[in-house]
Image (cartoon, rainbow, N blue to C red; front, top):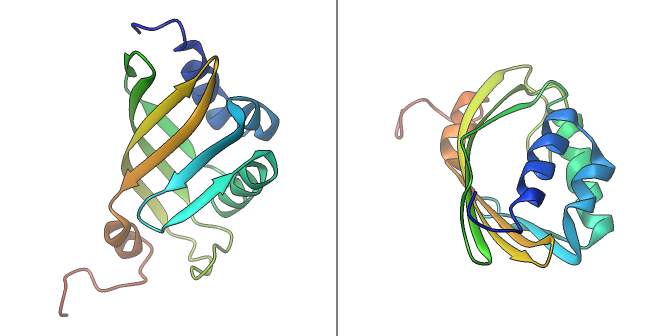
Length: 141
């Protein structure tokens, strides 16, 4: 890691894999945000970040994140990871399916001091719905 602000990324990775909601929220600035780009959802501020973590860990109680080394430069970083878990709880618009998913993800992070100001998460939303059995395996079928 090439920036003095990168320790927060290790804290984030540790908190996510430990399902440590307080640790997750502590990684963000007071007005920090997690943006789920494919769904259009933005969780800004400690209460909403906590809500996101509770929702996600509730829907995927066995979720695990396999991280590649972050790429850092100045106030920006990129995280690449694969998220795996079993969909055992409801998400808005996605009732629990009991299906296991494996999802490649890239997150673009804006750092502010020793915290995350904004994390934008990018993944294949259609591919996720396919794995959950919510859409056809091939378009048009």
